[in-house]
Image (cartoon, rainbow, N blue to C red; front, side):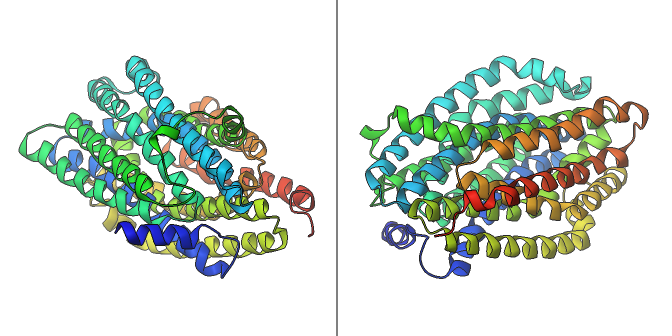
Length: 454
């Protein structure tokens, strides 16, 4: 496997030549499958405690998803900055600077992971209280959150390592490593909960173990790989100028991810106020919806990397072609998956719960959200383009207005009057549509400046 990975990295490092369709698909599909597998393995936490523990334990795992996403997504945004900086230097053939960016990215991963782990454990209790988690679920939620945060250094390391591979066009190696860790996660979930009689602590420990394995495998391959993305442990250090460049792109991208999570946090608080049935239903439905979103996001990340390399190489005409074709592919995949998921919604949700009331509530959520996913194609893909162009602040600001603003405003106003499920769920597609429209207007207004004629 080592020799194969070495060959793949050499072959795929330059994304600015060859067939656009083949390269984008070879990049995006493994990345989408990686995210889907990650969500699937995470979903086993919900499924195992839902089937073999209790409804309260299942609700506790699901109620923590928004806060975990908020903390993780902020630092994953920094990894997007590393992805862009490495990719642009690869495109410009500035390999020494690219290698320095790799070392800086690894150092940043370790520092941020330890910081989040320490901070998360200190504030786990207040976070759960802020979410308004019911008393019968509170202890489960705090326990799960504290164990999950303890594994943050490995989660951060995996995400930055995956970003390094993506910058060189390799999305298959992270898929291999995640699959290995995910299989361990499923097995450990079943062992800890069914055999040892544990509940949320068992699935949380299993998740941490899986992340340790995945991150260490990626580190092994980065140490073995030849060329620009090779990791030398002695070179893992912060380069101040590169860190600033990563931060200029990564911090706004992280804020954008955090904004989505913050708005979801407010939504989760509103969901919690409806009771344990709605909490459990939301946990199950979330896993179905994300299967569609991961393909949208994969094409968005493909655009970030491809646009970064093309701009570094000064190939603006080909870059325009990449953007058009990738967005078309993203739309086609999204429509097809939405149709499939709408057909399979109830059988798929039945894997998470046997409770008829919870199942009906979950199906309603899935239908509402899937009908609005096409807005996500515009929003997420154009955000990816702008990040690849080095313009990361605009998508972040627009997301604050279009996503966070709309959702939080409704939760604290309209939801007080219409305290029901369907109006709350409609906030998702409405906020996506508003944000997509604003991002599209900004992008097409500045496109000639961002992508000059060669």
